[in-house]
Length: 224
Ligand SMILES: [Zn+2]
Image 1 (spheres, rainbow, N blue to C red):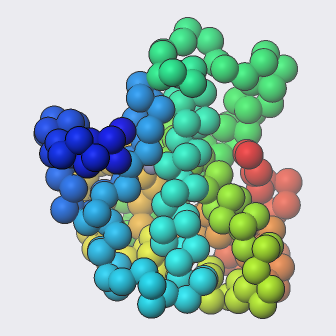
Image 2 (image 1 turned 180 degrees about the horizontal axis):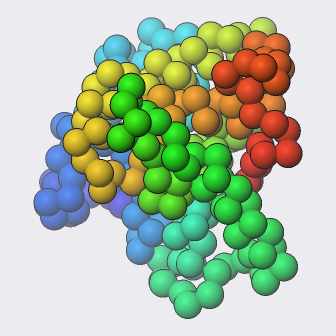
């Protein structure tokens, strides 16, 4: 839709009303339009020129955000919209699949719930509030790891470090600490839970059951 607006010389801001400023770093999925948007501002928000990125850095930033937004179309909320963006009363998934899908959501909520995201007991993540964002992270992460398989010599250690750096910045912790209604898992909870949930991360760093980043295999969730 944004591309069409540009072709027609319309302002993107005009098209989306006040929702979006194309020069602010932002990315989102709109279920009623079944569209993803990644702003021009986002493309220049990290180190600027994506052409200078290593494959691992590119996959951890632009690749991951694309996977994340696409997965929103199939998360706890997006699965109630059809391909034309029409809101449904039942899930797009067949009943048997939807049952498994909901069981997986319960486990995702448990994995993210009551985890401290600031060095203060008071700040704990609420797994129920952050469920759709956690699902988009897990789905987006799976997509990027699937793409990585096509690259010989892909440096997984480097990729996982970029992901953690990208997600658990001091800025994101401070901002989220003061915005309780934020639906994203907070700071280190977002990066650490996502990484611990990944079999590839556990094997790459040879994480053992006594290590802080360990998550038991039966608790790890693959959604898509
Ligand atoms: Zn999201």
